[in-house]
Image (tube, rainbow, N blue to C red; front, side, top):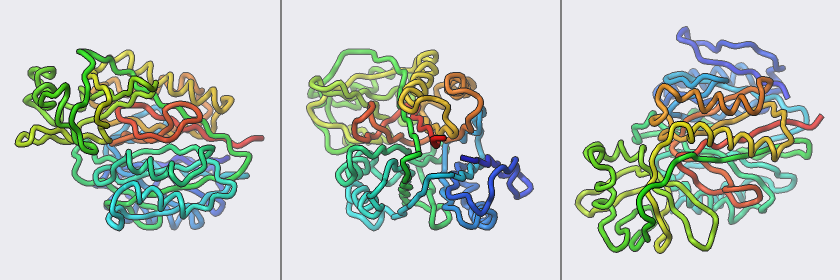
Length: 378
C-alpha cells in the first residue's frame, strides 16, 4: 500500500509529499472543518489530481494528521492498494423513514461476495447512529467488520457534511466496502471515563430520549450531579456522559447528551437509551482517557498482527473538550504503541461506530477512541 498525506493550504492547494501513482489511487479519505468543506474546490481538486479515486470527505470537530490535532484545516489521505478493491454507496437520510432503513439499504447495495470490511461515514446530526448500526447488522454477514463514525461541526451540533459521489453535503451517509483476502484490518474502541454515583434504572425512555431514572425526572437528577455545571447545559453534558448497560450482558455503552428540553424534562442522546437498562453517570479522568486510547490501539494491533500501514482514528468531540491542550496525548499514545512507520489520520466525531469487542456486531459509541488499522499481506 502506498499513501499520500496532504493538507489544504491557505494558498488554495494541497501540500505534502506524493508517493503514489495518482492514477492508481482507489480511495481518498479526507477530514476537514465544516465551513472549509463548503468550498467545492477542495473536492474538485482531489478529483482532478486522482481521477480514478473515490473521494470521501467528512466534516469534523478536529482533524488528526499524524501526531497533530488541528482545527479549521483539511487533511486528505490518498490510498493506493496493491491487492484490494473497493465499492461504495452514498445515500441521503432524507430519503428514508428512519436510520435503520438507511443502514439496511447501504448494506444491501454493496456487493457481498468477498466483502471483508465496511467503513461508514455519516451525517452527525440527523442520523441515529444506533439505528444505522442495527440496519447494517441486519443485512451484513457477521464476519464483515463494520467501523466508522458520525461527522461533526466543531461541537456546534447544527450541520455536518459528508460526501463521496458529490461534494460534501448535509444528510449524506457513505459506505465504503473493502474486498480482498490480502487486506488485514484490525479494530479497537475504548473510553477511559470514571463512573460515579449510584447505579440507576432507566424507568422511562423513548428511542434516544430519556425521561426518568428510578421514576424521577432524569433531567433534575442529572442537574443535581452536575452542580455548578448545570447552568452550562447542554454544552457541559459533553463532560459528563451516561453509561448504559444491561446486568445480563458485559456490553457497556457510553452516551452523550445532544440537547435538553426543560418543558418536558427530557434529555436527547446521540444514541438510543433502552428502557429498563441500568445507567450511571460518568466523569473525565485525564490519564485514563489517554490510557484508553492506548488500549484501543493495543486491541487493534493484536487483531491484525501488528505493523499497520494506515491507522484511522475516530475520537469523540467530548474527549477533545475534556483533554484540551492535552488532546495530542491520546494520539501520541496510539503512535507509541503502533509505531512510527504507519500513516496516521482521522477526526473528532459526533459518534463512533465499531464492534464492542472482537467478533461482535457494530454498535454506536460515544466518548471513545475508535481505531481501525489497515495493511496488505506481503
